[in-house]
Length: 112
Image (cartoon, rainbow, N blue to C red):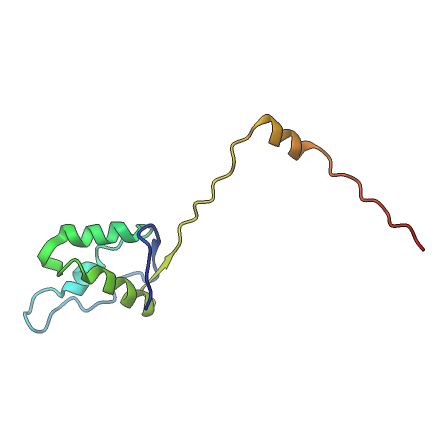
């Protein structure tokens, strides 16, 4: 079973909500459809869980958020990836000079 860190990024892979908007049992809106509408492209897993919790009982228990992430990923509705937190080192005189310096010449091997 998949597990996602709270800082992982959600990417929508469908243009519309693929869930059935109607609940046959009550005739009202389906809670899974309402929860899918809470996804925003580029939001974190934590932001989605918080959005579900804030929406309250209308979208179902907040524990459903984790199940949604797994279901929607397995069915290709969303993808979840680790954040790209690669930050370039700040420029200093030393590393700017090192980048500007020519590479050392390669030595030829002596033939035997």
